[in-house]
Amino acid sequence: MEQYIIKGGHPLVGEVEIGGAKNAALAILSAAIMTDDTVLIDNLPDVNDINVLLDAIEGIGAMVHRVDRHTVKINGKNIHDVSIEYDYIKKIRASYYLLGALLGKYKRADVALPGGCNIGSRPIDQHIKGFRAMGADVEIEHGKIMTEADRLVGKHIYFDVVSVGATINVMMAASMAEGMTILENVAKEPHVVDVANFLNSMGANIRGAGTDVIKIRGVQKLHGTEYSVIPDQIEAGTFMFAAAATRGDVTVLNVIPKHLEATIAKLVEIGCEVEEFDDAVRVVSKGNLRSTHVKTLPYPGFPTDMQPQIGVTLALCKGTSIITESIFENRFKYLDELARMGGVSKIEGNSATIEGVEKFTGARVSAPDLRAGAALCIAGLAAEGYTVVDDIVYIQRGYERFEEKLRSLGGVIEKVSSEKEMQKFKLKVG
Image (tube, rainbow, N blue to C red; front, side):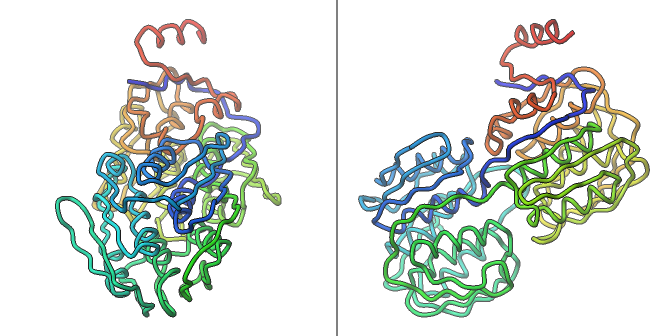
């Protein structure tokens, strides 16, 4: 089993290039099969989730050609199967986007119920509600969601809760339905807008993505396109909080600062200096950080995917901070791990009270999920002594070359797979 070993106590300093947004890329790759023409997508992150989804797409008969690490050509003309098996799905959650894509194009899709990070239930009732409203039959049998429609017809659909997955999935299906679909109470995340822009570049007619109401006039067919995925705001925010926690000075390059407003606001609140440029953000932390309160909310609120990273940082801030997690119920598992390193917190329901401490000390911890794993690496980089992070397969699902990027900023971190390699690392770094 691979692990990260980290020697903490070095401020992160320098510049780091941010890759394409994983969550946007997963939906865009799914939507790429909705045309019989060839689609070229670049600025893809080279992470496990993307590679698994490409395997699943290839598995149903689409042509997938990796041009390079971050570019792929997809052609969905020869798809012979609308059934996505559990082997692919159990590894990643976002493979449910193939439901909306296949239902839109072929009016039929069978997709195994999804897997992914264990951070709480992510019900797909809103997806099903949307598909049914447009005239699809939806059944859940033998662990699969089975959808079929004679024809999809545009409808006025109001989502009961704001859901990124349902917004994207129903938007994809609606882009090839008959007539007008109006979606209300939709998610406004940057990756929703990116998927809408991608579909429009293929000939879809989608208006209002990024607002509360999306209007989609269905078209009969979509055509090929070339498209570049937006930068990953969560990867960017992770490095920004790593700068804050390690008392560093980091510039994240290739970002859209507007997407980072909630993250920037909290960094400023706790006492960091933040400088914004056209496509870069610099975070300077001189220590003496102070506590604050955070509540996770749908975009443009503070993202749930940044909650563990700010939690670890707040554990090193002077005073008492309170985090309220309003999206996923299991998102505080990392605080139990952080306690091994000297973190002090108390969890009650969907709130965590964090008492700031002077320092963390290195320990052996385990990554409970993708973002929590990255947050524990930040804790290790800020800690005194050595930290070992187990279960880094989660981290590799969503961060490309994570340890290499941290090393380029002066972080002392290595991926190891045995006790011997760990000892070698300790001897090397002293």
